[in-house]
Amino acid sequence: MARRRRESPPAPAPRLPSSGLAEEILASLAAGAIPEAPPEEPLEGPGRILALVDRLTRRAATEAVAAPEKPETWVTFEVAGEIYGLPVLCVEEVLRVTTITRLPYAPAPVRGITQLRGRVLPVVDLRARLGQPEAAIGPRSRIVVVTSRGRTLGLLVDAAQEVVKLLPSTQEAPPAEVMSERSGFIIAVCRRERSLIILLDVDEVLLVPDRLDAEAG
Image (cartoon, one colour):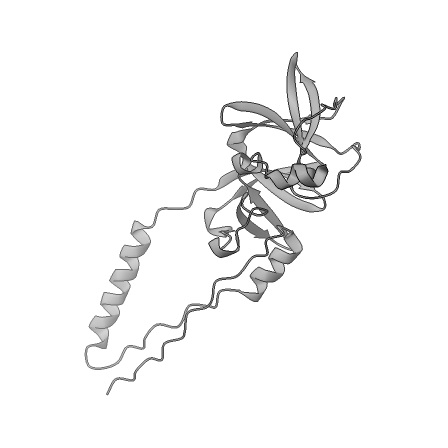
């Protein structure tokens, strides 16, 4: 008589905190780590040789159909001690910070405007947009020039990091039930060694909740 295989209950999806902080996200993902795949059913009975052939044939067909992964390119930068990334396709360039002129009555995250080869470039302070306190501009500060919905503007960040290539399989999407007004701009998170890259949707980052203006006022 064939032995019945005990089925393991599905592992619950990891819950990410709404704060968007890398330390908390890492802890949440570690707590909800996906278990290893269960072993295959042992081959038994007189037909086990043919069953082995069938298994190997199915496995080879699956591997042949699966297309190789193509890495995606991301531009990474630092904001308030965390590492964030934007798709390279939406980033035009990264600039050193020169002069940023404040604008009265601008939305709360707007730090001001600067000049970019003779044109006016609005600059959004990414710290303010992410709910972090404003910081003084230092020698490592940079402006990441991005395009969003056909418009060009700058994102003020604490420091530029590097351009990295990430496989889609290494990106973990935040569960829908934990997404909130504060974390809705997160596309995914990607663990690399002991760090975490928080991948952002530039269009969502530039949608400013009303509460930011209220808090700034």
